[in-house]
Each structure stands twice: as C-alpha cells, then as structure tokens.
Image 1 (cartoon, helix red, strand yellow):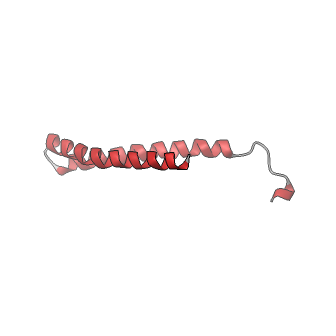
Image 2 (cartoon, one colour; image 1 turned 90 degrees about the horizontal axis):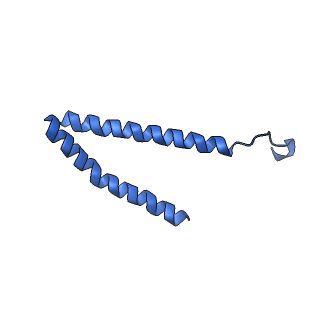
Image 3 (cartoon, helix red, strand yellow; image 1 turned 120 degrees about the vertical axis):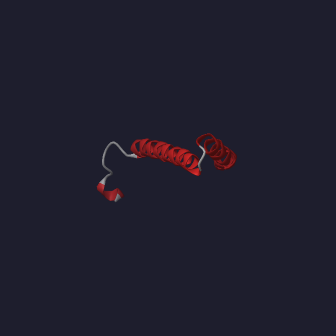
Length: 74
C-alpha cells in the first residue's frame, strides 16, 4: 500500500514538473510579461495549499475519539 501511495505522489510531482513550466510559458506569452506567469503559478500554489489544508483537517477530525480516553491510558 505504501509503495502505491509513494508512486502516486511521484507521478503527481512529475506531472507538475511538466505542466508548471508549460503554464508559465503560456501565461507569459499571452500577458506579455513574466508577471502573468508568476501570478498564475502563485494562485495555483495557493489553491493547492488550501486544498491540502482542508483535506488534512477532515482526516484529523475523524481520527479524534468521541469520548475522552480513560485515565489509565494517559
């Protein structure tokens, strides 16, 4: 299971290594300056960070026990 997750993370990273420069070049070409590409990649980074934050908080809430642990477990 862990090997599959590591492979998935690696695959997404490889896709990002291809699409980020392509998107940067596209935005730079259509806006006429480097700023357009930088703003586009900055917005994509913020969206990804927000998605990671919300995905993480949902998992953390599910892992929280409904009742407090017994005193002996501390």
